[in-house]
Length: 561
Image (cartoon, rainbow, N blue to C red; front, side, top):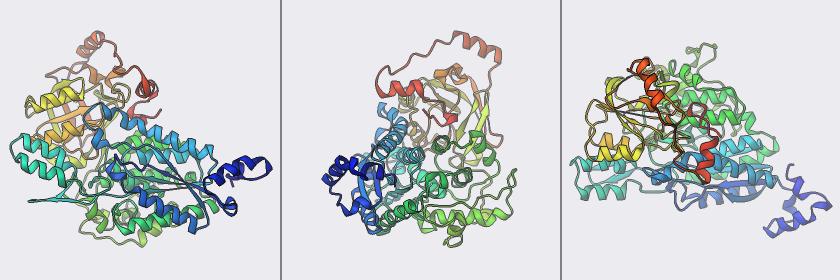
C-alpha cells in the first residue's frame, strides 16, 4: 500500500506516533488509509449538509476495513459571488481545489480518496486532483436542493425565485412584498440549486464518467437515500483500493466522450465545455472543443430541465435520473453511428463495479419525461459551438435555453467593457429590443477569472427581452442562464480578439443551425480599428488573481493553468 511509506518499518516510528495522536489504533495501521476530501462550508447552501455525509462516508470506510481521514478543501458559492468582484475567484478556485486535493493526499501518502463535492467548480477541481494523484477515488456529490413554493408560485428555483424575479419586480409585474416572499422560499433546503445548472450538470456528468455511484447526482441532498449512497461510497472506495482501480481506468477517451454526449443530450451548463476540457487535459487525453462541435451536429437533446423548462432535478430524479439517460442513449445506439463508426455511448467501467451498459439495462425510465433517444421531439443538441470572425477559436451557446424562433438573430451592438457597465444600462432601461449586448474584457485573463453573467442575462429575461435581445461575451454564463447568450468568445478582448474591436451600432449575426457568429464589418475597417486599439491594462496587479491571469489559457482550451 502507498501508505506503507508513512507507517511501515522502524524508521517510521515518529510517523506512527503522530498518526496515533489522531486516533489511529495500532491495529488500524494495517488498514488502507482513505482520505475524505470534504468541501463542507457554512457559506455554500450546496455544502451545508456535508457534515452528516462525512459521517456516513466514514462509517462506510470503517465498515469495509479502512481507516478514514477527513480534510477540508475550499468552496465558493457562485450565486453569492455573482454580480460583483467576488465572481472573479470562482473559476480560478477550480485549480486551487485540485492543488489542495493533490497536495494533502500526496503529502500523506493516502491509498485512496473519497471526494465530497457538490457545487460548480468544486466537482471538476476534485476530479482534476484525483487524476493527478491517480489513486483509487470515488466522488460523492451532495445532491440537489428541494423545490421552493411560495403563494401562487409553485416549483420555485433559485433563478426563477430570485434572479429573474428581480427583473419582474423592476418591470412592475410583481410587488415588493411578493418579491421578498419569493426570496425567502426560493432556496428551501441544503443542496445544489434545483435546475440543470453547473453544479447539477457536473454531478450528472461525473456519474456518466463513472466516478460516482448510480443515482448519486440526482438524489436529493436532504434524503435518506443520499446518506445511504454516501455510506455505500465509503464501502466501495475500500474495494477500489483492494482492486487498485484508479481514475485513469475509469476516465478514458470513451468515457469522456460519453460525458460530452450526455451534456449535449441534457442541454446543461455551458461551463461543461471548460470543465471537461480541463479534465481531459489532466487525464492526458486528446479531446478538443472540435470534438464538442462534431458531436453537437449529430446528437440531439432528449430532455429539458430548468432553466430551459419548468422541470427540476426532483422531476428528473423521479423519471430515472442518469441511469434513465444512459438507457435512452444506449437503446438507440445500435442505429446511431458517428463518423468513427462508434455507437452513441461506449460501454465503460464505473467505480460501482458495473459497466455503463449494465446500469442502463437495469434502469427505470419514465419516458414521458425522459424519452428514448429516437422518440425525442428535439432536433438540436442542448449545447453548441459557434465559429466566425468574432470567434475564430470558437464560442459556446446553450441551445436548449434559446427559443427556436430565435435560432437566427441579427442585431446592433451595444458595447460594455465590464459586467457592471452592462448592468447599469439594463437597470436604467437603456437596452432596447433588437440590440446585442457585448460584454468584454471579462475573459480568463482579462477579467481576470472569467466571471459568470447570470445577473445581466436574468435581468434581460425578467424585463421581457429574452427573445428580442442577445448577449455575447468573452466571459461565461451560469448554467441557470437562458436566452440568446453566447459566451467563451475566443480570442478574448484582453488578448486582442475581434470582440475588442466591436463598436456601438455594428451589426452582429448569430446563426445557430449553421453554428456561425459574425461581425458584419468590413475587414479593412477592422484592421484600422486594430491599429488604434490600446494595449490591455490588467485590472488586478497582485495576489492570486494576478498569478492566475498570467498563467491561464483561453476558454477554448478549458481555461487551464
